[in-house]
Length: 159
Image (cartoon, rainbow, N blue to C red; front, side, top):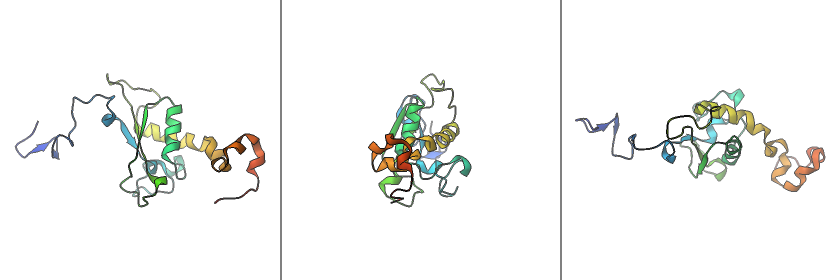
């Protein structure tokens, strides 16, 4: 596997940095990573946005991403990691989401999501439809969410 220059598949270093054929698709290291910055319409491409602004959402959180993907039937894991291009170190911006795209035999886990781009587009479409996004006061008082349109008028405003 190693060439005479000490490089392994174009990468210097040891076994931690190289792709291993022994890893199965079900191993967490083989799952794809998505950071909230990838689908944040407040970010530029240089700041880490990966898809078109029109398909993105405003300041998504890792909880919202996880909720949408679990509802779509995907195997999801959340890690407490910070995106390298993220300037703020606040907890709001932390979180890396791992998603299993393929089964051990190489077939897709979910035919509706063949690529990481398809997952990001799905997130951009579904996060605005979440109840937490529909009713802004649901974060402060969850019991008011069931009262209907009463809580949506001129209330406390943004805090």
